Image (cartoon, rainbow, N blue to C red; front, side, top):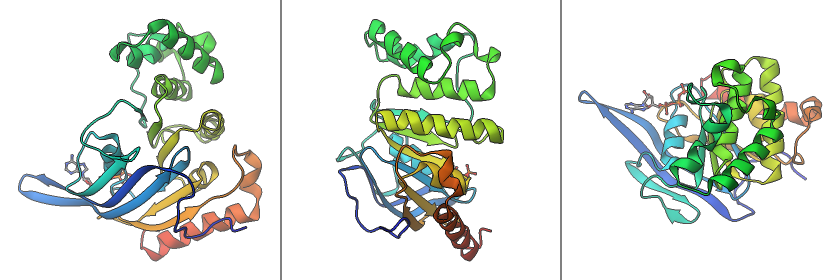
Amino acid sequence: MTHAKEASTTPRGTAISIRDVGMEFSRRGQSVTALDGVSLDIAAGTFCSVLGPSGCGKSTLLSLISGLARPTRGEVRVGGRPLAGPYHDVGIVFQSDVLLPWMTILDNILLPARVKKQDMGAARARGLRLLENVGLIDFRDHYPSELSGGMRQRASICRALLTEPSVLLMDEPFGALDALTREKMQLDLNRIWAEDAKTVMFITHDIEEAVALADQVIVMGPRPGKVIRRYEIDFAQPRTLGIRREPRFQDIVDDIRNVFHSAGVL
Ligand SMILES: Nc1ncnc2c1ncn2[C@@H]1O[C@H](COP(=O)(O)OP(=O)(O)OP(=O)(O)O)[C@@H](O)[C@H]1O
């Protein structure tokens, strides 16, 4: 069985499909091509990491999948339908937590349900379950300023998952965390994801993190961003710390590093 290959097929139903997407921004008479002919598929319930140099359009790609922005060319489909705008069935986690400082952790987590006018009893039960799951149950009545960066990011993940979205978009969620906290968060995220397999798109600059978590790694080249390599990572899910010690894990990491080197990124 191959463990890393340039894959050409998607084995399961496709949750996110991007076809020949281009994105151009115009500002003060100047135009910037952020994405140029990006195509990729993410199978339902799988975890996709996206790696690429700064400015190659990773966040732009994520905003297109969220429906918050429209591509200047090409098509983005989520759940089989072409996106025409923002939709509810998605959770988003950014690098800095966007918790409201005047609300307790639990109230912050319940916010999406309140906004969507959902049954607050059921939402509260789910919120408490999520907090329990990430070890924050004893902090439910604390305010964000009373928590560490890692704890706040954990709370942000709970908030993104509260309404049970089928798609979770994560833009460098662990980028601001120290190395140890980051490793713990990776394991936590992998465990939470494995419990009810959302379709995840996870942006990171960290090659090892990308490989450790994902079923598929997309490598983008320098701006204008396009996909320059795709890997299927078939280590069993959920992942353990041990896979990083496996030679074939390092082989994949080295291969990606070489791809960046050839593209002039490293
Ligand atoms: N709203 C905007 N208006 C004008 N240009 C933009 C806008 N958003 C992004 N860009 C440009 O598009 C390009 C891609 O930006 P983007 O933030 O998607 O890259 P990125 O890969 O996420 O970068 P990083 O890794 O540094 O976060 C950059 O040149 C950026 O300046």
